[in-house]
Length: 279
Ligand code: PAF
Image 1: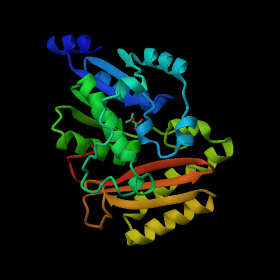
Image 2: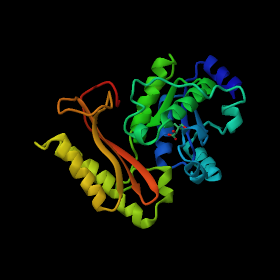
Image 3: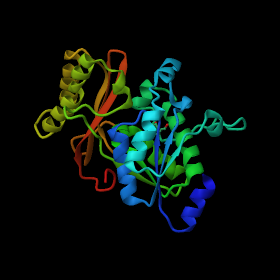
């Protein structure tokens, strides 16, 4: 694969890369579509990365649907599928002790509830970028904090890959697509709509006189009323990921909640005057 990609690059072909953990859905396919638009050759990886899971049971339960994924990738016009083994990514001499520096953005929000998660994400994406050497990597806004982490990784490790963040794809009712949705019962799927509804509420409320704290509290109340267990609903500065003030030009509402035993995340850009990030 390295030889083939090297030859393509030498011939001036732009390589686009979509890293995934499989169980592909329309969200992933939209990343591939964006990559096809901007690049000449698209590589998708499927690798369920053990170093980013906090619980062994979550890793075990992660949906694996390779046959179906292969069909979807063929239909989407993906050029090359990379399905490494754990030994390919983490050979015996791999340094598992590497601790990446993210200026604190790895300890907030998702990081506060999933210690070490982003170090594992950075570790695998760093390794995949090293193997694939793409011109551009395509990632979904659904994992907003993950995108910020990879932006920081590219900066601190001086990588030459361009990062492209692609918009969230939702079901017709508004649920953000996620491989984890496969584990939701029809009832929980319905109740989980409160997440996107509360984000829409925040987007409208930010235009009003309500304070950010009041909006967050109201959103949490709405999520709880549907029987979900929220971990956070925060309005943040999209550049620093710190709590936003009303003056922040780039405002994002981010949330995580348990729908039964399935942990869901979602977010929405409330205002973007930063010009630099979400394009
Ligand atoms: O978003 C994901 O599916 C994973 O975190 C990623 C980026 C493929 C790294 O394992």
